[in-house]
Image (cartoon, rainbow, N blue to C red; front, side, top):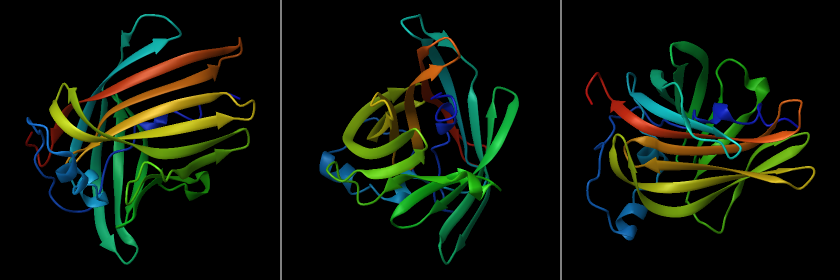
Length: 226
């Protein structure tokens, strides 16, 4: 099957409740136990109208060299609390091109993403609490593939926006022919997603080709302030 439909739209994994985000950059590594205390949906997906993330991207095909890509920009345009949890709308741009918006539902137990206005296209639970490495959960399912998501651990990550103590999540996609692809995401408390590595085998009509996109946080703003 082709992997193009599965993936590179996954760099929508950012957001959370209608509260002001916390500190942007952690310059000193936090103790593992202290970091674990911050592993909540509200902490890892801070949300309020006007929050904006800008990412730089680098792509690679097969064993080729890395190539700089267009910046990705995400902005929260709507956010409201309700009986089911906190809902939000995230607008997206790749370079100057707008892409379909993402709907977010955050509860105390999970963060769920879907295509805004198109619930029939399904959803994905990108975070499920409490985070435990021995308890993976299902992501999306296609006719020829299925996805499992797991918590890998905590890591100190440096990206253009700074140094962050983060939570590493891994998405394992298994195809009908038993081949696999892995997608990796890192989330920092008070900021959201700071890094993603999405690698997929894509069939472009001439056989399967491995394509990888690395996305790193370049700038994080709330109400126009970095």
